[in-house]
Image (cartoon, rainbow over all chains, first blue to last red; front, side, top):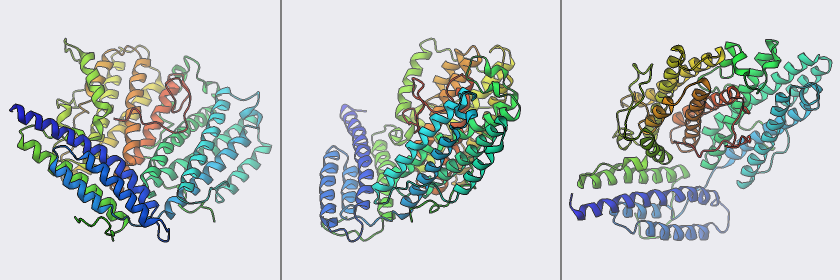
Length: 286
Length: 262
C-alpha cells in the first residue's frame, strides 16, 4: 500500500466512525420527531423544518471527510427526514400503563407482607426481610419509570394496581390470617412468585410490542430484574418446602450445605416464557 | 433524493425507520467494503458489529494478560468445542450483517459459556478445585445445558437464513477467559468467572433486544436475557452476596446496567 492509500484508508475509517456517530443521534431524533409529529399539532411543519435543518447541518458536518458514498447516503437521509410520519403510540402507552399497574400491585403486596411478623418482624429470616424491602423499593422505581415513559408519550400516569390481579392478591392475603408462620411464609412467597413471574413475562413480551426503542430498552432493563426475583423466590420456596429455612442465608459456607436441587431450581427454563404475560391493555388507564 | 428540503414525506413511520436502516446497511455492506476492497485493506466490519466496543478493550487486556510467554492454559473439556482461532477483526464472519451478525456473536458468546462451564466441571471432577458443593455442580451442569440451547437457537436462526452455524467461541473474549480460568483454584474463583461471563451475556442481550429489527430475533434475545440474569442471581447467592443485580460496591439496582455489554 502506498502512503497515499494509507491516508485514504484512515479517512475511510474516520468516515465509518462519523457515519456511526451521525446515525446514532439521528435514530434517537427520528423517534422524537415522529412522536412530535402527530396530526393536528400546529407546530409540526416548523418543527420538522427545524429538525431537518439541524440534522442536515449535523450530517453535512459529519460527512465532510472523504466518504463520498457516506455523504450521498447522508443526503438521502436528510431527504427522508424532510417530514416524518405520524406515530401510533397508543400501544406503547397501554403497555407502559399496564406495567405500572403491575408494579403498583407488587409494591402494595410487599408492603403488606412486610407487616407480617414472619416476613418483616422480629421472627423473620433477615435475608427474606431484606429481599422484600429491596424488592419493594425496586418495584416502586419501576412504576415511576413506566409512568414517566407513558407521560412522555402524552399518556396518563397509572397509579392504581392491575385490576385483573387484585382479586388474586386479596384472596391470598385473606388466607394468611389463619396460617401458621411457616404456612404464611410459604403463602407470601408463593404469591410474590406469581406476581414477579407475571411481571417478568409481561415485560419480555413487551420488548417486542413496544415501538419506541427507548421503551424497548426500559422493558429490557427491568425484565431481568424481575426474573432474578423469580429465581430467588423459587429457591426460597424450595428451601422452605424442604424445611431448611436456615439455608436461606448469605453466611459463608451456606453454599456447601445446599441440597443439589438448589442449584437448578431457580431457573427452570432455558427460555423465558410469556404464557402468563398480561394483555397490553389490561392495566391501561381507562 | 430531492433538493426540495420542504418536500413532505408521504410514507409511514415504519417506512421511515426502514429507509434509515437501509441507509445504514448500504453504507456498511456496500460502501465501506467496496472502498476497502479497492484499497486492498480488510473490510471494516468490526466497526459495525456490536461486540467491538468494550470488547476490543477486553481483548487488549487479554493480550497483556497472556503476555509474551503466550502459554494458553490447557482447558479440560474443550475437546468437543472449537476454541476460536479467529481474529476479532474477522468476526462476525464476512457476509453477516444486522440481526444475523448479532446472532453470530450471540452464538459465539453462548459457545464460550458452554466451554467455560465444561472446563469448570472437568476441573472439578479432576479434583482441581477442592470440595465441590452438590448445588454448585448441579448449577454448572444445568446452566451449561441452557447455554447450549441458547447457542443452538441462534445457530438455527443463522441456518434458516442459509448461513453457517457458529461453532467457535467468541474470539474477542476467549483469550481473557482462558487467562482467567488458568488462575482459578477453587469454586469461588470459578463462580466469579462465571459471574463475569453471565453478566456480559445478559447485558449484551439487553442492549441488543432494543436494537434488533426482526420480531423473531427480539423475542429470542428477550427470552434469553432474563435466564442469564437468573444465573447471575444464583451465582451471587453462592458467593454469599445479595442475590440480584448490583453495583460494584454491592448495592442492589432496580435497572440492570449495560456497561459490561459486549
